[in-house]
Amino acid sequence: MPTMTHHIDVPCSPQALYQYITQPWLWHEWHPNSVRSSSSEKKLRVGDTFVEEISLRPLSWLPLTIHRQLNYTVIDAKAGQYWEIKAVASDGGSKVHFQYYFKATDEGTRFTRILRYEINGLMRLLAPILLRANQRNSAIAMANLRTRAETLGQALVNTE
Image 1 (cartoon, one colour):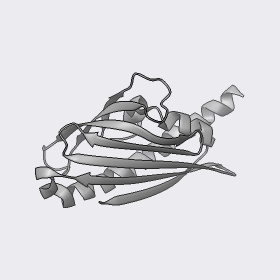
Image 2 (cartoon, rainbow, N blue to C red; image 1 turned 135 degrees about the vertical axis):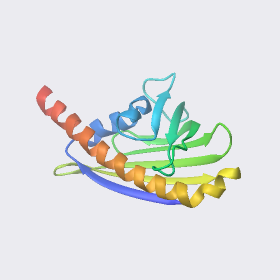
Image 3 (cartoon, rainbow, N blue to C red; image 1 turned 90 degrees about the vertical axis):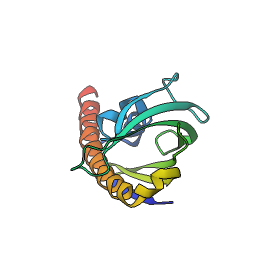
Image 4 (spheres, helix red, strand yellow; image 1 turned 180 degrees about the vertical axis):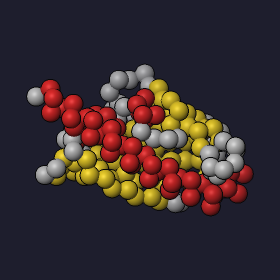
């Protein structure tokens, strides 16, 4: 099961970043694979579920695009500190496991994102290509998240 770990430092509080990250219907703002997400809950707690639609281009120079629906469950959560979610693709072709950590620093928050995933069925033939695409898109997502978090941090300063 491939595992990717990313860290970024952002100038907003762990609570503000946690609140933003745990609203998957906003993921399309920072993650290039996220098309849309929905949940019947506005504040997700352990045991709650949500659905995300993703779109992935394994090779940026080819027009091939993979579309999947992921069905998530919140596995564990501690506001401002930790969030863990797992998903299964609606076609059973993959499983995804995320762990998000939020640690206060002098400058804001040290955010750690751990992604583990498993590819099953015919999609396994694309595993090496999907790994590179996931590495590329995860790096883009972290850079985008840092930009969004800077905006969050500035918004918090402006409201105090």
